[in-house]
Length: 342
Image (cartoon, rainbow, N blue to C red; front, top):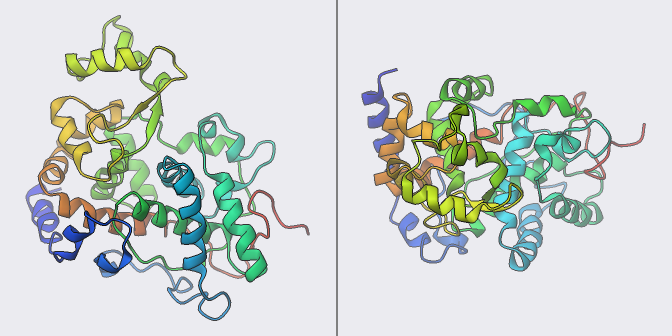
């Protein structure tokens, strides 16, 4: 791939209005948002549309926003958790809400899902929507929209979410092995993203979600003390950052911020940290050292407006991965944690 051409495309995508800059000052005001143009990626199918619930459940966006805001006001860490929950859902079987199903052998019960949070938020939203519009709004649509609302609440960009996803009826724990755990090499990540219909740019941009949120220290223990069975720390970590992590991670069950500089702010500091050898996960560090992704990291580190714009575009693409839309596919669950009765 000719990265010179790609970077020109990235820089060209920075042509967003000054409203996006204004949004950084009052992140909760929808009126100041610049809505990305969705023509930048392939069509999302014949059955997803922005007006899908216009007649059957008007005001669905407002209900989702209001309830999520109530949860966010009580615990602002829920925003990052919902982004992660949405990603886990879409990686396995597409964005079909299968991660929400709760029974023995389901994705939700898998080891890879052990630290996932936000299920109660989705259940709360679903319960309210069932009262207003019974058997109408899918759990898959709710989770996709909640990820967008969570991004806005933490100061990130807004994008329009087309609706019409149906809920999957299968959820298999073993399939969660597909979900990246932060230790994969770049080739494996590129192949995974390509299997989802996403590209290298999406990989780097969606990794920028690590500008917020936390990881368990158990994920990085080997980097701190025994990298590749050498008995030494990972040389791709700066000595100062290494000492910081060793102090923070006394136990594998402890948590540490993914972004060490501005962990509670949606910004491009994640990319600025990588050249300083401050990538928490080994896959984060690899984005900067791999020649296929490094040019994009450098561009995003110096162009925050590009990151904001492209994050919205890539998140919209993620939300449309392998969706179920045919009436003979899936169902509209009345409760997100279990399938409908026959």
